[in-house]
Amino acid sequence: MKLLSVDIEISNVFELRPGEPIEKYAPFDIAVAATQIDGGEHRLWYSSDDAGRPKLNLDRQDAKELLQYLEEMQKEGYAVCAWNGLSFDLRWIARAADDVATASRIARAMYDPMYQFFKLKGFPVGLDAVAKGLRIGLGKLMDAADAPREWQAGRHERVFDYVLGDVRMTNEIVSAILRRREIAWITQRGKRSAVRVPRLRTVQECIADPMPDQSWMSSPISDKKFTGWLKG
Image (cartoon, rainbow, N blue to C red; front, side, top):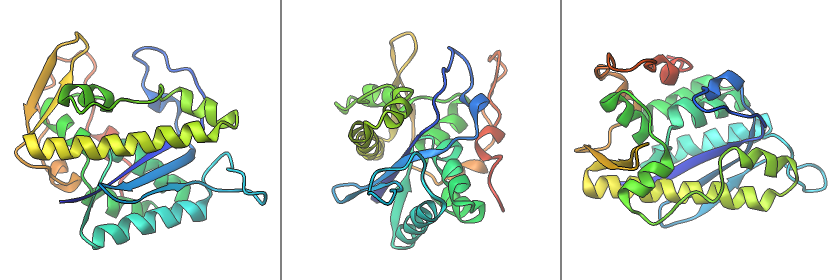
């Protein structure tokens, strides 16, 4: 499987309280996106002003070019991957590009191990918790909430390094899942847990799966949180 991971950072600054859903502050604008072929080239996707300085938000045309690149790579046989990409990354790229149809096609054909995990366990899990659970030796370079502040402050290189770190980590995590056929994570209690994943499945395949038992949860998350924006 030839992997190509994608990740975005938003430019919106807000204070997310413990337990508060991030969707409360939506819609989101994209500051920068990154793509990386596993073991190959990486690219940064952002818009520039006439002086060559990064703009606050990704322009519509640049977002469209990102979607075009992702779809072309899928057609060339690459497995486009994103951690929570169905609920977050592709959704907001779709908005930035004003092209839900193309983003939906890409999202349905891509691999989102977090969504696959959600359809197995009924709750989400973060990239950093899985990196630690799989012991891949990589971690986030900053808190996600700090990236928009750094971007708005003009410290663009720090955000570039952060988003590139996340796509590299996504590739490493997906590779580890493929090798070990499991998703392991560190729970909120600090213990390691794991769930069997015989193979990675596309978003479209996972959508067709029934939801697991969520009766034990006080505030279960609906599958519509992930799929509600899709077209077709």
